[in-house]
Image (tube, rainbow, N blue to C red; front, side, top):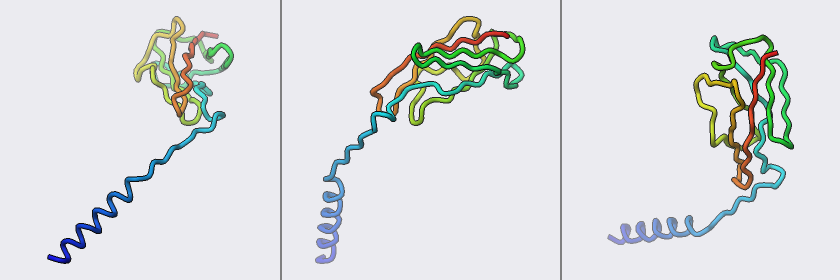
Length: 124
C-alpha cells in the first residue's frame, strides 16, 4: 500500500511539474514573408511547359510565359513559396482555366502577413 501511495505522489509531481512552463516562440521579422518565389506550369499531358517567369513582388504578380503555345484552359501549376509560409487559398489539385488571371493567398509562418497574388499565364 505504501508503494502505491509513493508511486501515485511521484507520478502526480512529474505531471504537474512538466506542464507548468509556457514556451513562447518568436518568429524573426525577416522570416515573416508570404511571397511566391517560383511557379511551374504543366499541360494536360503533365509535361512542364514553363519558359519565362516574371515575379513582381511590389504588385504581387506572377507572369509565366509558356515555352510553346498551348491551351490556357487546361493547365496545372505548382508554386514555390517563402520558407514556412502556407497557401491558404489554393489553386486546386486539378487542371484549371488560366485564360484570365487567378488569385492565390499566401500566409506567413507566424500568420502576421497575408498576401494575395495574381497569377497570369500567357502563350508566347
